[in-house]
Length: 70
Picture 1 (cartoon, rainbow, N blue to C red):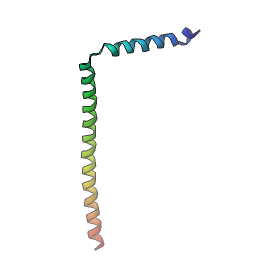
Picture 2 (cartoon, rainbow, N blue to C red; picture 1 turned 180 degrees about the vertical axis):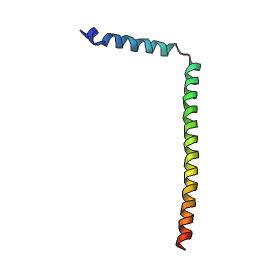
Picture 3 (spheres, helix red, strand yellow; picture 1 turned 60 degrees about the horizontal axis):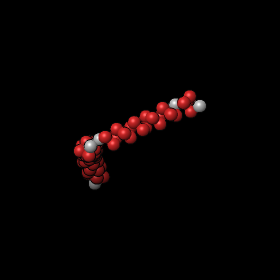
Picture 4 (cartoon, rainbow, N blue to C red; picture 1 turned 90 degrees about the vertical axis):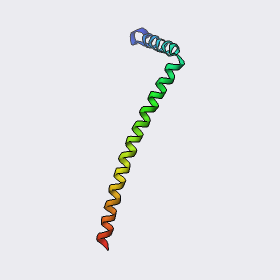
């Protein structure tokens, strides 16, 4: 009955994935972790740069508005 819905196949796929994870060496896991974190850091640096530029523009607008009101 469960084979009809693919439950046993899904279970077999999960078991294969866990076996593959066990086969990975510690070095490979560390490389993957480093790559993931490096990508995350690059994304954060890019976001930070954009935010700083936006902040500078807003400071300029604020300065101009304050000059107008004086």
